[in-house]
Amino acid sequence: FREKDIYFPHNLDFRGRAYPMPPNLNHMGDDLSRGSLRFSEGMKLGHRGLFWLKVQVCSLWGLDKLSFDDRAKYTEENIDLVRDSVRNPLDPNCDWWTKADAPWQCLATCQELIAAIDSGDPENFLSTLPIHQDGSCNGLQHYAALGRDYFGGEQVNLLPGDDPRDVYSGVCDRVKKEVTQAAAYDKGDLDPSSGDKDAYNRKLCARLLDGLVDRKVVKQTVMTSVYGVTYIGARRQIQSRLEEKLQDIQAKGLIPENDDSDKIVKQCASFLASITLQSLKGLFSEAREIMDWLGLMAGIVSRQGQPMKWVTPLGLPVVQPYRRESMKVVSTVLQSMQLNLEDEMVPVSSRRQRSAFPPNFIHSLDSTHMMMTAFEMDRRGLPFAAVHDSYWCHAGNVDEMNTILRDCFIELYSNTILEDLHCSLQMQYPDAYFPPVPPRGTLDLNRVRDSKYFFN
Figure (cartoon, rainbow, N blue to C red):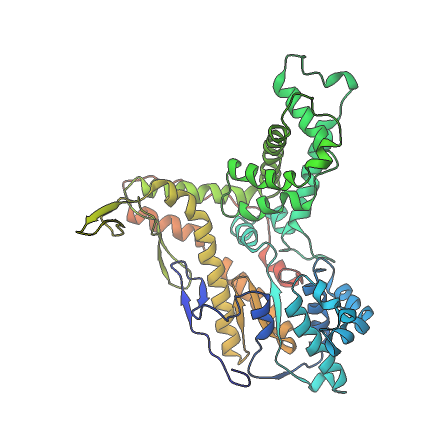
């Protein structure tokens, strides 16, 4: 396929999310696949394209929490290592690129950057490399926009800031503060024979965890909160991270001799899961109310014996396919086989309909945002690709794409999305009562236009 144009036809899943149909090589694949693909059409870097190449080198290295200017500066300070990586990438002494978070994409970007610099005229250099702009915990961005959640929106870069905000660090800071406060004690307080076992366990967990909670411990729970992670799920996620810190926990010398370390870690995970979920609720109050309201709507519909149905702002009808498992045994001379029955005669699964609706509704909105951006990019003749909430374009078009995707986001959430959903459900099921849409916060969506780290 070298020097040939490759086209990637796409499928839409039932929520409207786009997936390339070729199963092996595609831009949603692994790092090697992504690093191997370029736009077939070259476009001039222009005034700012070289800057965005430098930013991407640093971002793929793993320093994507820096400001754009600091990322470009990091690349400039390491330009000799970048050049060595391009000159002889297989030389063990030129392996700087292999230490990146995404090494193959980093190497491809290094090659493009050096080629542009060595051209002698970077602004007129024809670049084919895709530059990525990614949403900041995009599911929470959509929830915050739906609920006009000011504080939640601030955490996920819906509001302007000098540096990109990291929601995982924001939640982590709140959790660490709670743990430190719970760990405050007089030496006589930590007494298992005091009679209040719950208070003892809580204080023991707090003291064991104090100083050991970091961003990695809470990250997965924050990420999956948009999918409605439960307390049990959060505890399991956190427990996996705490097991990696078992030696540090044991080194505190606070675990009684007769206690099982695994049992203590599980207790600590339960303690931390509760604090993490509560911190998320405090940071994203209006967003959380929207999430709970969506689940309530799906529960009411499922009690009517019907799957959850809605129409996206682009007019795509969505029906959740979740039904109870129904098996049929087919016996033959040679063997018996069990077949899954999937048709509209099988009753819906109320539990799955209810738990899956909030994340599926958000996915239908993030796919709408992506399609709106794609339509506008196409209208302007600008090549575009996307991996859900990661939007790709030529380096010389990044600034224009950033304007487009922000305008499309504001246009999307200027619609009465939740009110339309409520009205639709009330019309479909006139005998059922659907609670009104929860009150919104004070977030001004127009400020998204000034937030340079909304996608970054």
